[in-house]
Image 1 (cartoon, rainbow, N blue to C red):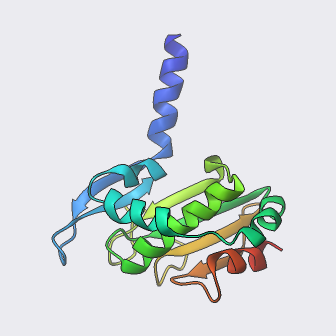
Image 2 (image 1 turned 60 degrees about the horizontal axis):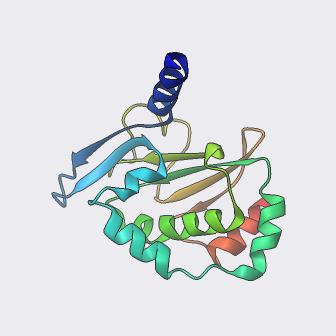
Length: 163
């Protein structure tokens, strides 16, 4: 039993390594580092996250196609909790992922500051210029990304990448 508890605690620690810091520009709290989606339940983020998530209407016509094509893919989301585009697009993207049953084990969430850096070297080699950036991977190789705002819709852009 102790071994199972130790494994659970250490697994949780490796799954997220983030901290809350004050944004120098806005004086508001922001997330920095790798987190799970539960980090957005914090009162500093839940307001905008929950409203956008709840109000977004997923394109149900594409959901079945996305479900079958997303199998085996991994996704990295690089976002800034200080960024209006991230505050709009990331909750919408999560709603799409929930609608297709995407496994959180295949998802990495990297929170960055205004210089597009996390706590350590999470964004090195990712070439992040704008946030949010949604990076889709297959066999650990990037097959496409959605940067800042979708060209058409998140669903259509995601389907074009994975199809």
